[in-house]
Image 1: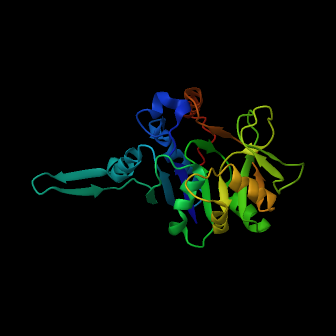
Image 2 (image 1 turned 90 degrees about the vertical axis):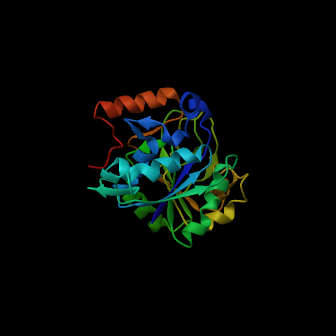
Length: 258
């Protein structure tokens, strides 16, 4: 199964960092938060990724173009312009970077991945949020309910897309975006999706969190996987500071890998 990661937005609420790099490349403990997210998936055996790029995509491409070399011992034969890598310490990842346009909205970016996914079930998340969500259990949950979409439901402070979810209920009854008065279950990212969701996305101007998710809920095709553990986005500089402190103290709950 492949994991699709949204990594093309401007990151305007963390402009102190995103002015020079895309938000997924903002570092926590000297590694981009994108790397942390990929390590979470990798801990559950997911090692093939499709990164949906847009704003400053060259920064992401440069990172992966040189990643193996930076993680290894290297010999350079300067005269012959050859390089030999020894003791490769890089992860066993296959990474596809897609140019989805700087102005494309989240739904449009997801639809760009269609040709690279075929008819297979896939994972999706945002390139700016970390969690100790059990990806293996999330996939199992998705297979059991047989709907088109599963979304991880979390309960942070009310500043994200909120959906109706009754006690012991799995099916999402409705979805609305950014209701700051409601601190109930919200969209924590970390989706499992069937290719049928592409039919809910019109094009580049479609926002995934609006019509597609609303219509999936209306059609009884959106199910919530409740996650009561750690989840934290990196929307602001304050968020980055919180995550950095946890990482530097050796208390990062999202570090589910050895």
